[in-house]
Length: 146
Image 1 (tube, rainbow, N blue to C red):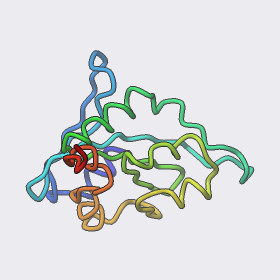
Image 2 (cartoon, one colour):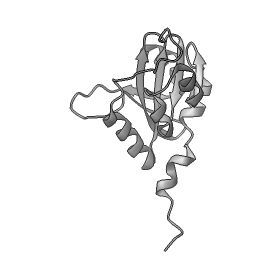
Image 3 (cartoon, helix red, strand yellow):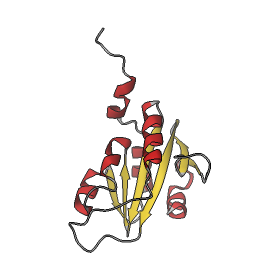
């Protein structure tokens, strides 16, 4: 998954793969592009379940990983989870993580920020991952109440 993404993106970004067994929750990829930095957690499931009512389980997307990404997003980092199932790639912002691993195929696809059949289109991908999700920065806004 990483090799495919890295080749597709080419020089549109500077990205580094992270494999750290000691730092709990650190995502798989850090990137810099268009003057911003961010993080992407990569997840892959080989195939969809045969029944459409089956919940898509993602046991390897741990609560520590979700928390790390959400906290970093609140503090200004751009954070995403990229999921590949069979030939379908889906990307999720932290406000949509609750759907990952808890819903059916159709609901998961509907909840994604973007879905690609086969490899993500590089310019669409960069446009998406370099834009701040406004709903996630609400925690940083000063309160208007006393």
